[in-house]
Image (cartoon, rainbow, N blue to C red; front, side, top):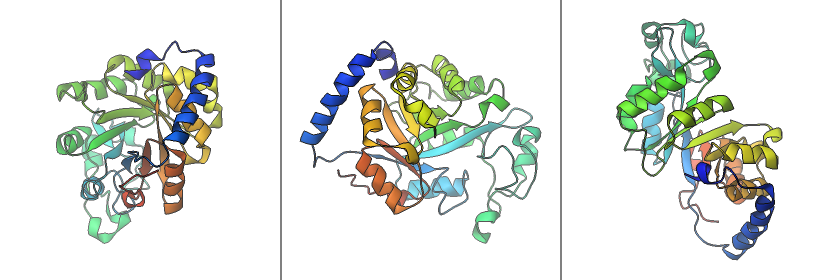
Length: 277
């Protein structure tokens, strides 16, 4: 994997490859470039986030990946929800980690988005793997893993049980804002691509990017800090770049112009499927 090969690359090579990359890019203008269309928490612009309704909509819209947020119930079940409390996206209250799976499962996770979604449930990680693997790629975010000691081992065990610890075509990717968690996942699942999430420019220095490249395959920043220079630097270190969160056509067009590898969006239809430069 790229992260294994680039661990020792020096900063001097980064600068050299950057100029070569820019020359090649200029010469190849007009070629069709594939950009992965990642449905953020499912097609969450159209259906309640992190629910079967949103993921089914993403498949219907022919997204390349669904992005999911994994946390853990009080009694150890891996579940999909973004916030560390259930207050915003369900009819309940309280911290995810303080509620049992049965308590979480009995919540309505859909009606806040519209009456037609009343009764949507908080899914389990296993349900999502069973329902969607082979139909669409799955980008797994470990959400606040510092709140759930050992969640990395639980996620790795679930993937291994379904023989998804050696994914083909990078159709399983794991990411987190918690870099130590990503390092741990890389040790547990060395053949699964890893990504680091950030919205901070302090993580875009040559030194920081090279450190990330020693254990991650993807550098996934907020679109607010994306530039062509950053995209080139990430590529020159052997990583790909996926940017978030697109909620307007203008933002999608900007990221396409910047040359990112994947666009993480609430609205998959904002990403042109022809993906032309």
